[in-house]
Length: 189
Image (tube, rainbow, N blue to C red; front, side, top):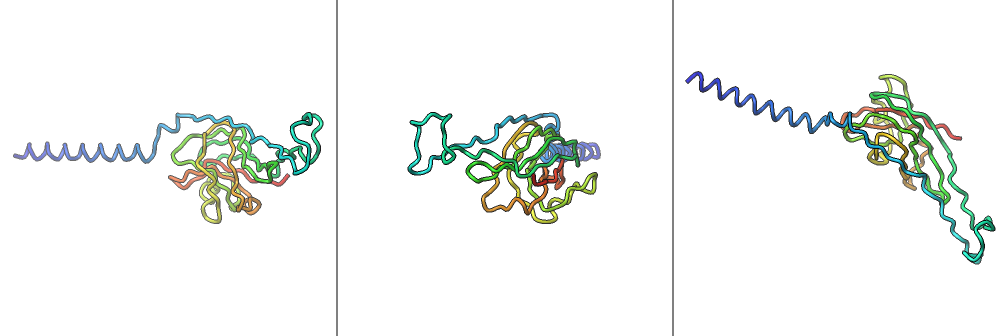
């Protein structure tokens, strides 16, 4: 009878251990650290919008007038990433598009992959070292989107109702573990 109880306990312990390991794998997603997702997006192109009464496509493009020529994308702020929880490099830009909208652009991004990574605008200061790992959710922040890839160039449209100048930093934020993988201070150009 004692042997039967011991076997039952071992089986129960094995089942509990298997459930804990499975839950841990689902929660932590350790394989994400070795799987890179590379994104190569071009900066959104400007589209010329003729004003009423202006010549249209009958005019050669080389003779476009100022009223039909796009003003083109203009970088209005920029910064370079520093590493926090994981080694992170690359640059970030706020780009004003010809239509007046703004895009946050990551260029040459290189960081670790991870579970639930987000791109955040924040009012928190960028701090080097472990002091900067967890500050970005303490004040105001805007969760722009899920990070498209942990490497490459990518664009994130800024909502029209967001005053990006009120958020002087950008973080690659792991929402699962409330930690910054890397961050950049935005400086107006």
